[in-house]
Image 1 (cartoon, helix red, strand yellow):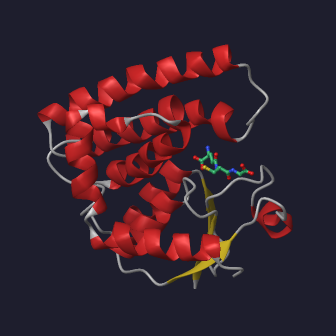
Image 2 (cartoon, protein in one colour; image 1 turned 90 degrees about the horizontal axis):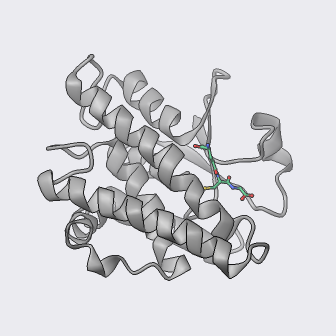
Image 3 (spheres, rainbow, N blue to C red; image 1 turned 30 degrees about the vertical axis):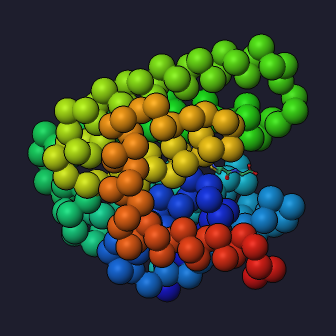
Length: 204
Ligand SMILES: N[C@@H](CCC(=O)N[C@@H](CS)C(=O)NCC(=O)O)C(=O)O
């Protein structure tokens, strides 16, 4: 069976959501930050997600795993398997989340307590600009990469959910709010969230 190394609520949740959307049976391998012994055997960087197949294939990096699974399943619902304009639109958005958005949260989480408030304010200002940009995109289309729900929405929803932990109020962004309500009502999102929250609070 395929395995997903994950930390509850972390970026790995995007892959978990995709697996639920595709009805894939997977083994969830929960990683604890205090013991990464097993994770380090599949990713020397000690980062989740890692996708491991029983045949031995190992895939890392959120956006690559999301694309890999859709291509492997030959399922074009959430990522075009042909070279369409939309496929590159989705790839552009994935690149934006991975490089412009995701890592802007690092000073707040990974290096908690190590930065002066002035430094955190700079990162927060940067995030506000990106939120404005996202809100603008979502004013033209119902989904992050256009007219249809895609793997870019799965990655974005997980990252935007972290705003609640750094006191970034998303309620002022009309289009982001509307989009969040839509994405969070999907059963795949609800199932992945319930499972990860349960695991976070249990000793499993
Ligand atoms: N570029 C990587 C980033 C992965 C990453 O930052 N993962 C975080 C969770 S969101 C992590 O594993 N953190 C482990 C830790 O903080 O100890 C990817 O796209 O997969």
